[in-house]
Length: 461
Image (cartoon, rainbow, N blue to C red; front, side, top):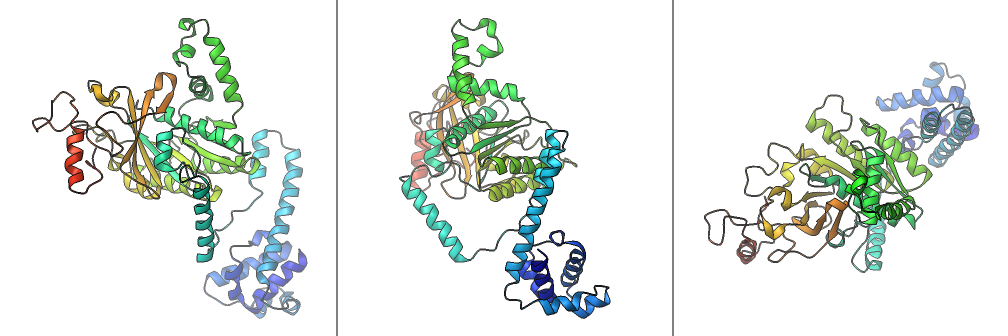
């Protein structure tokens, strides 16, 4: 390392502006002994807009500076020397961490030591050729998939058709009113992702800030074995064969690479750190954060802090190159109440501006049986409303059969008179074609809209 460090510092003393060629590759902490202080001094000078050469260094007390300039051959390979310094430093940190981990008293202490080994790497500026390579790889993957699923399966066939699956590097925000089934929906996504990850040597990480791991596990077992969750919450009322189904579901779950972190009040830094630690051991295929709005926030400033959390989760998805899903709450004051429909729009999301801009995909779950229990045409159905999708259609919906007693939402065809466009359930009272009691006028509304060349009937629907 000494030879590499000498070449880097000697080159910088010949031309301190070369610092910007290696600023994303090496840090002062990567240099040994007195060389560390010299690199930090050069860094400070360059960032202040000043030049710094061997004479300046000698005047600052670095008597060996002149000798370093004589050792440095040229500036041509400064990037290579800087990379070698950083790599050698990292090997030293790993060796040191290993020795300290052997003396650690707790698992948490060992994890903390391991997570501190690797430095934060700056993003690399990419050329258009890099972009074309990524585009070609993505096109090839889509071609191989037959134009269907290209990402992590959602577990709902009708939603896979509209999204192509969850894409690596994307932030997906799932919203809905209370009791609509957000957590059950997210858990189903996680189970489908875990089944996908199993054959690829990957895993899924679920941050459950509201439910305990035991509660989440009960739901997962009910989902996998397809039985009522009530059998587990009220076992005395369950049939004799219930335990066989519980055992079957437990075996299915035990075979999935799904990890649950149920610590309450964790922060964005906790989520990023723990996700990175898991990813270092076993590559992640999918990350779920349930819920985003109850994560630790010092000032509880919804707009600013929730926006920062969304940005941090988006950065995590890009850094690890995995899809990250965050559940979020709707504004209670205007989540459809008082409007002709309670189907949420993107404007009903709490701190909607910050979050909607950051997310790649925004999906809302809506069940008419909760919002309008007297509206019979949609009884037993649920809708996944795609309110935003950067790489696909928006303002469309995937239809599902609502079986939340079993913690399941299953793909189904659109009910009669409906399609995948987000439309109203019925025309406003007093207009032609409305029965005022939940009659379905959606087909007539859709026909008029399509005659004007529109694909979406009601932007607020």
